[in-house]
Image (cartoon, rainbow, N blue to C red; front, side, top):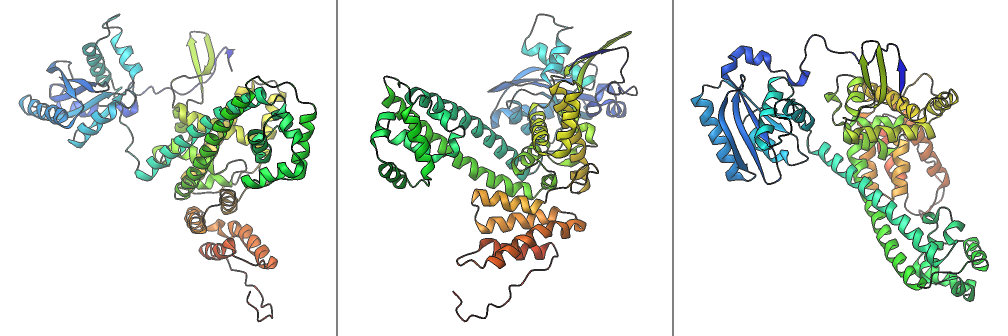
Length: 523
């Protein structure tokens, strides 16, 4: 992703102002006077922080002091600050807190609750403002001085307003789900390694071993190749029936075929199988947790306009929810370039005189948002006809595969901004067709065996996000599904048959009535 060019346009600079737009304080300083504008610098740690008060000229009004992260400590700091503000005739004030993992959040909340404006300073900014003044000397006091200089120069940045509880809940659930998926993947690798030791070549017979619970059950509950060969087909079928695992006879046939050519197992094969069985139980428990979290995530997604992204072929509930959780409210972004800028989806650049060289993507970015966008880009290249053709064309031209993914991610960021901010479904001129949001939700909940009450609630919430002009098109697949249910006339409960009429009514579509059967037997 690097290239050398004589001249390239790059990202536009801001010649009218040198400060960061979200860090400008000079108009406020001019309004009250530099000697009456105060800056509180806070260097955060885990259990306690250090803070001081200076004016805009850099004169220290309150020397560095330690504040404990508890209610008495914060109360004493706020009281001392208010006393100094009154004594020094400070007419305007901001609190600059260095962002340090999660340690700065208690400090930020305490000063904000006291009525002060709180801004954040990136640790890289603190380092760059400290090194010229105190090279080779890193202490809490030198950090406080650097934080003050950063705030004076417009690098104490105002953060967007905190999202409401539902956005924060969506973010927490999607991140926890992603963590569970990683742990489940690690467990899969461990189980496969143990099976290769106890049953050499067994996992190779079932490339998608986790989709064959019957094969996994026989491997963990019966024994090695000799025990499997000695057991009859009826005995193996009995083991599966006792475990409540559905199976087909061809699965047992593949297991017995492996037994005929199996290699020598590990000397402690029985103990290895026992360890694998424990890991498999842990994996199944995590899969159940993941499914439960995904149902909660779907409910939260349906209450946001990001559910419209599911009309893009290749975007499902999970990928749309992860993108929504890391993005937050779309009102925080003025345009699509704000999305790619926050995610760091643009190359670094070195330019001096006639030398103008582009490098890899910038390192300072919101990595979680970048990861969510790149995962969607991978799905689009795999599952979306339009983006698959684009990617194939770029690869045939010899472009770096990483550059191809970034281009797809940038296009998705632009499309998603237009859809979410404008309340529109996917309507790309180069796309053959689009997906339908309620249809995807129905399929998702069918796979997750979601209770009918939640399915109906999620569908109705999603219908509120759909633009009125698309209600008829979105209702069409549901009408077809309801027609199939009516025509089949299956006995027993029909959850979708009870849900879909209410959803179709919300979308303003007519409901198909079943013709009378002519039979007096209602069963």
